[in-house]
Image (cartoon, rainbow, N blue to C red; front, side, top):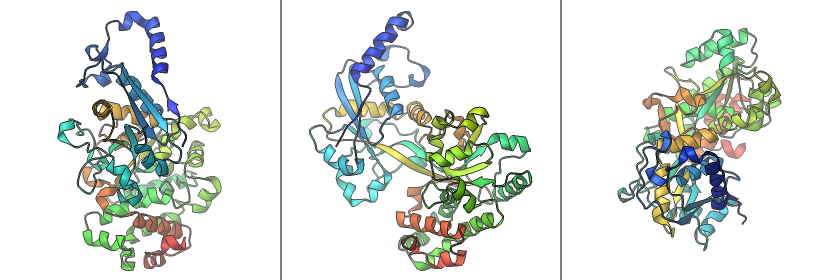
Length: 445
């Protein structure tokens, strides 16, 4: 197991001392919670003595975690004697359990929704403190419904930090140039694609031609599929049991996907030829500037900011772009809320009070929004104002927004759908064949 420490307390103090020497006249008297902090932090009130001294360790799998380090610095404004360190663990999923029982166990550690259904992760979750315990005074009201996950007891043991959804990056300049409006429903999406092709855009929609959750088929059709079955316990049960007859529930989504391929709005062969993977390659292809709509996940969007300068085409001719859900329904699209990173608190932490104080500080729309904006992922709060790229999600209809946990579907259903869409789009199966083979599609992939 190797570890990498980010922004030690000593490094922070050196940086702070240099800043003080340069601007002492501007910040004199601004100490702990008695100072007037910047606007984003005005609501936080310390519940522990500000002179408290201790060390808190956060463990995760990111090789670097700039957004978390930003929060460390913001927290130091309130508790200047607290030391916060981030530790990157190699092979995180297989080492976090042993790390939690070691002499150097982390106080806070990264968790994922998949751990709730993985028996091997039971020891990891057993170490997690119940953050929804009223006595902790951790106010989660700012976290939107779709980002809230609970264990089988209904307790919140994981705080959502970053979320993502599925949809498309839209080149806003192309739409402005062609005089077209962003489509709001299925009929408008078809109409826009037809007009874009007539205007010379050979591939109105593109994406990675694969079976991952970041590939184009998942982003295009899976949210619609989820909307079709959510709340229907009989359908969900049949799908989870790999009941062959349940495959027909995929049909509406598969038929729309097939239509887009048949009409040439989506060309799997061209996508395979021009896009090698579902992350770096798909972003760089989008930055060429001739793709109106690029399908993918929020993870793809998170990589755009750092790659703008790496794209010669984008650097030479930058354009405005935004993220939208795919409007595949007659009344619009579907916002599938997914959390890709949680924090859990080690209930055995030797500094549990201050650890909970940091979590309480973090569980605010300003801090969660700051972290998401730096990473360019979707904030778990309802405030999308910090990143213009996600501004389309402001005021999204609640009846068209849901989390994967709410669907009740298990991961095997997820895989079957991904295999079905790939096979249909690439002409390997008809819609009827994909429907009939439900339950064995992923195995035959």
